[in-house]
Length: 360
Image (tube, rainbow, N blue to C red):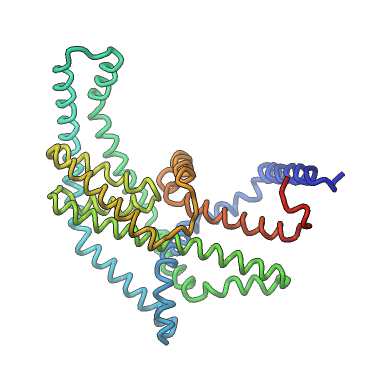
């Protein structure tokens, strides 16, 4: 009976669902493990992101005969220099602009309400449903503004809540840079030669996928942020540095990030002067076109090979489930899962007889 391929697939599927069910009813066993992983998730993820950004520099220094430990110390000094520069030069300007932006939100809401009322009074006929919708929006503009302000304050509070975990990031980062290449050899020494080769290939593919995405997305975001800042300064847009930094963060989200980064700039520009909002949109379009046609193809290429529709679907799902963190991490997670499945699928196909290489 199990000789039929369709039967084997059915049995395998049933066993997988049975395993998931058994794990769900024995949750008390895995709860301490999950709590432990949650406790170290922030420093491991944070150190991992910085590792993929800084490891090429350490490797480059090592290539020029600089001892690896010394190269790591140089990287740490550079990071400390950037932090010092950010705290003493960038942070005061951003804080000042951010406070002004928060204080101006009620005025923007009142201006929007007056604009809607003026437009409404000039209309000879407005459908009842449309009029009710507009009235509801104008009545709740102040509430929306207060909710936005509260959300921003809550976000800042959550960031400070992670500060204690961030203190562990340098320790994780140091040992990742120092001993990261020793992890796979340590595991493979307990495996057979065939499984060792498979694990080395899989780890190499995952490492290539993550490094290409993280390094590429970091470089792309910095380049787009610089272009946005230059453009905002040229058109004399208020809060240009704060909005450009917001653009850098948003551009970490693939595909939709550049469009999300333009929303606050266009709104701020529009309430200063309608034409300024148009120019802010023009700056975003120019930066997005330069990024998509020149920067991304040369920096990231087609390493992820993910269709744009898949990206949009994943981002919508991740945003609804895990919020902003889901938007940031869903694409690399999907790329890693895709790499793992592809690896084992190709290995499985190689082991099948020539006449049974198809799944069905």
